[in-house]
Image (cartoon, rainbow, N blue to C red):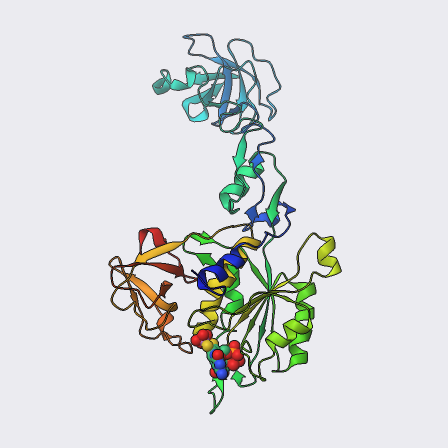
Length: 419
Ligand SMILES: Nc1nc2c(c(=O)[nH]1)N[C@H]1C(S)=C(S)[C@@H](COP(=O)(O)OP(=O)(O)OC[C@H]3O[C@@H](n4cnc5c(N)ncnc54)[C@H](O)[C@@H]3O)O[C@H]1N2
Ligand code: MOO
């Protein structure tokens, strides 16, 4: 039986959170969001009978090969009458007069004294067949037909389809807004660290990564609103929690998750009345990861939102990423409307071993077998180079066993089909 803080239960608690309340977005702002509702065409596509070629709309009796009398240079709205033997100029995309039988391509014709002739080598042209070079109304989509399905990630194809179907707004889940707070008085952001100092392994990538998060082939919309670096003290952390409650949906902190007097996150969360959803996770690295939710502010309640979530990641760099993969990713997938993340598994290689599990080991697929890096220590990062996922390894894992895989949030590949 899993214990309360088991890896699977912690992940499932994060995944079970409600999506953010939906909002109507104009097409120009909908890119990269998850669609909240099925969307139907407001008009047929195309919504009128149109010309597929530049040339002449003709009304031609059967087996007549011209010449046709040019009665108009043409109108975009096609509002004119053509009698048998008459022609009107027409451009691609213009409405075809109702009385036209087909459209002659301009390069198949010549014009003389107001008459349109077929060129000698085009007298048998297919342009004369009924409906030739004419696009029917509704050939692509009929009015009222569903064109987009809820939970689709909105990209170029979806926006183009919505636009031509007359849609101006799409109901979307908002992208979770994220704030970052980095702690650690010993952490420096440039130059060579002295004894007891450490170079910041988070701020060079975390904020940017949020804009391009993925879980294998699934994209997860999110955006970074701010990042801050604070002193290691309770007041600074509490102030950041208050700020996050009014500015973001998710606050991600690094460091200070421990239980020592130097670690302020848990005390600040208690002081601000946060509900602890996941107090720690039975795994290495990333054990002290905490997931909490601040009380909803007045503004959040009025907007139908819950309180801001806090994902407290440990200071050790690999531990932080393991915590983010375990609870941060499913939380963002849930809030952004992506929903459940696909679970991935792979066949353990002989390097997927641990004395005490679960252990999240940076790993990659090598000829269909998952091989873990030897650099899997909590403070190490080297194992991530070239890795595709965390392999979740237990003390009972043997080579050949099927084990869970957590794709690294930047790894662009389809875990279903391997590397
Ligand atoms: N007595 C105990 N000590 C520790 C325990 C424990 O259970 N009892 N757990 C260990 C584990 S596991 C982890 S993980 C860490 C958790 O540490 P914190 O979240 O409190 O983080 P810090 O103490 O602030 O930092 C830990 C480590 O990480 C370095 N760090 C911090 N920020 C950065 C950064 N931006 N880039 C690179 N490295 C960073 C920091 O300098 C520390 O070395 O606690 C263990 N201890
Ligand atoms: O669990 Mo700690 O997160 O091993 O490094």
